[in-house]
Image 1 (cartoon, rainbow, N blue to C red):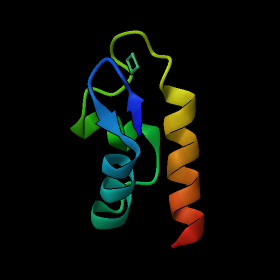
Image 2 (cartoon, protein in one colour; image 1 turned 45 degrees about the vertical axis):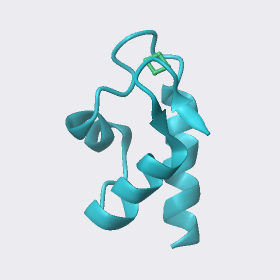
Image 3 (cartoon, rainbow, N blue to C red; image 1 turned 135 degrees about the vertical axis):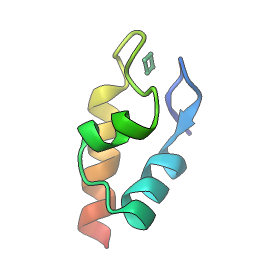
Length: 57
Ligand code: FES
């Protein structure tokens, strides 16, 4: 599913960045994608995806 509709960033993409690049916070995701830079509604869900991925790892 898309987490960030404005920039078409999916939960899979966020999980991939977390697992493969060791990014464990929103700041890191935002350094490599435009997530949250338009409406900002995706930030909370993106944080949940990161937390779930880190916990499952
Ligand atoms: Fe991510 Fe709008 S949904 S900036």
